[in-house]
Image 1 (cartoon, rainbow, N blue to C red):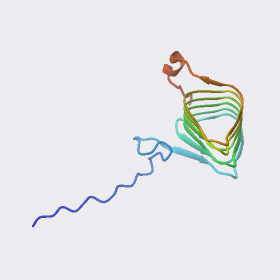
Image 2 (cartoon, rainbow, N blue to C red):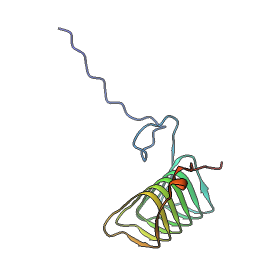
Image 3 (tube, helix red, strand yellow):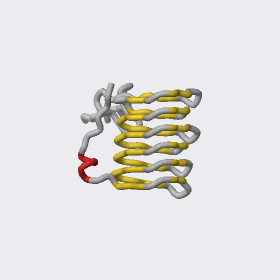
Image 4 (cartoon, helix red, strand yellow):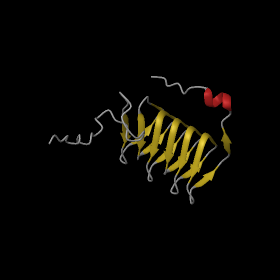
Length: 140
């Protein structure tokens, strides 16, 4: 007699972070397209998706690197998913290195996934408990 219609599927709003898998309050993300070439350090409280070329250090919450992109500088992120070329050190809590990635530099991590076919020319180091507990601080 009485029927309850199922609620329509909710779509994440513009503040959702696709890299983090959902809505995290006021989280945002920024995209550097394939046509972007930037010299200088990048610091963001947002998640970053990079398809272009960056010459400088990157500090952010979460980083997704596209296959054709190049980063020449250090990366520091709480999580990173890399599939392009990196020339520089990487310091990430959760790190995923995809098969198309070419890494030239040392890597420190808490959790690490490497797909077969990825190339890394550098040393791997699991972060110590004291450095893993230290929060990532971002400078505006």
